[in-house]
Picture 1: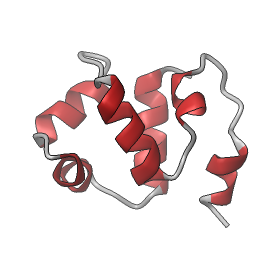
Picture 2: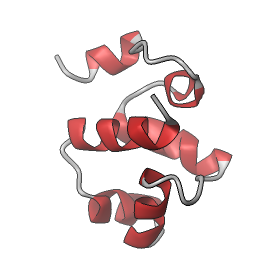
Picture 3: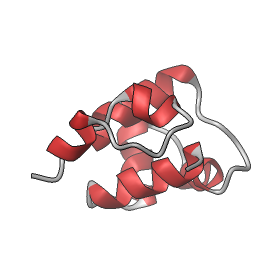
Picture 4: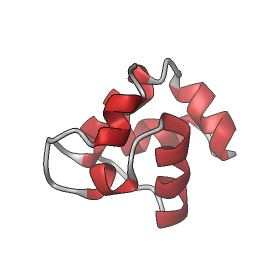
Length: 77
């Protein structure tokens, strides 16, 4: 699973729209769209903030594995 796919999956699991995520990060909705379509990558600071907003681990977002982290699973309880 790519970073873009993970970002999209985590955002939807958190019940947020691209606009919601953008507002929380103080970026444009288009920036979130670019990240989720692999046309751009968020900065390290934004990735860290995304992990907190989506309640997933930064390790999971950045890893090349599809395995879901414990933190990611806890977000869906």
